[in-house]
Length: 167
Image (cartoon, rainbow, N blue to C red; front, side, top):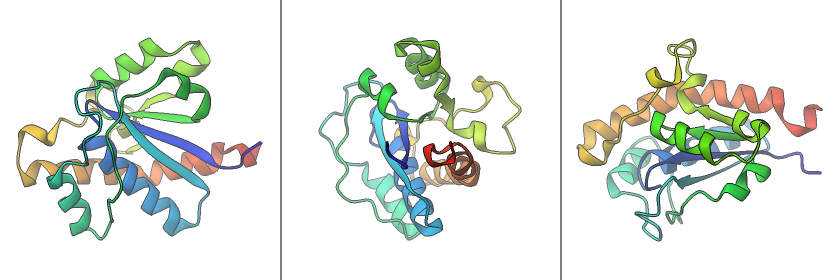
């Protein structure tokens, strides 16, 4: 049995929000010395095979987070069995993922990423979304960074408290 806590972040096309969250969480987990593996996917196949959006990559670089080797892919329902936490970036992703879940236990793994942000943790999922920056400019990617960053400590605390090694 693995002791690695496995997280996947999910948005629409897997080129903006979810890879940003993936790289941000992976960097923070590595910095904290946590055994956490993070990957990402999209709910659609629209961008399969594409790299991370250059604006997302630039925002990550601005904060010292490297973003290399990313290729967009579509979420595979078999991954419910392979991940402890499935983080939706917006409500349409949350709804789509919960609908794909093969069991109630699998559906319970789906959480809104911002449900780990203390500022909105008590809100319903429809108030915890991160809008798609793809339609905007650098300021929209900066806003995505800020919203994701606010949830990172809570996500890592959850991984630490609920990881397989903790029993």
